[in-house]
Image (cartoon, rainbow, N blue to C red; front, side):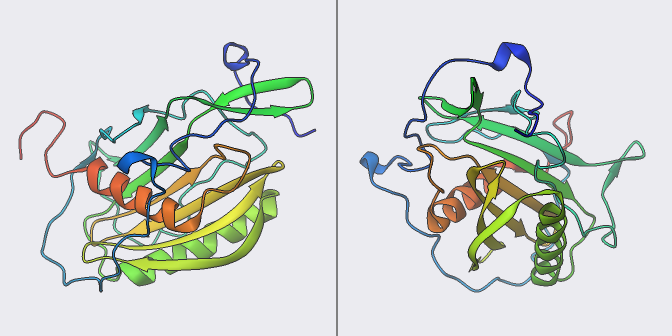
Length: 230
C-alpha cells in the first residue's frame, strides 16, 4: 500500500458516507452544472489575495486539512511559470484551502482510516492572465500529465465549462485507489484547481464539481489587501 502522509491524530474509525459532494444544499437536490455562458471581456478587476471562503454547508480553513496522500499524489497547479506572478514582499501570492462538510469523509484502506476534506483547493494569483482559456488548457494538460507520472490515473474524458467570469475544465481520476474529481479554473487574474474527495466512495459528478468550483473561486478571491485596504 502506498504510504499516506497522514498525522496520527487524523486516524479514525469509520466508513465512507454521503456528504455535500453528492448533495449540495437546495433541499438536498444534486447541484446542477454552472450556467453555460461565454467568458466575458476583461473588466480590469485584479485580485490581491486568496481568502478562506464561506460556503454553504462547508467549513473551510487554510492549509491541507491534515490529509496528505504522499508520494506526490496530491494535486497542484503546474504549467503557469510563464505567467507574471503577483508578489507580496517578494513572495508569490498563492492560497491553499481545505473545506469539510458534515458528516466528515472517511477514507479507509487496510487497517487504517483517515478523515479527509470534501475538497482541497490551490490558487495562484497573477498581475494579469491575458488568455484565461489558454492558461487553463496549459495548466490542466501539464498538471494532469505530471500527476499521471506520479501514479494518478485519469477516468473518462474531461469536460469544459465556461461562465462570464471564468473558464473551467474537470476530469475524474483515481489516486491511491480512491475516486477523485478535479477541476481547474482560470480568469483574468488567477489560475487554480479544486480536488474533490469521494463522499460515498464514488466520483463526485463533473457537473456538481464544476458548480462547487465556481462557488469556491468566486468566494475565495479578494481585491483587498491583507490589512483590509483596497
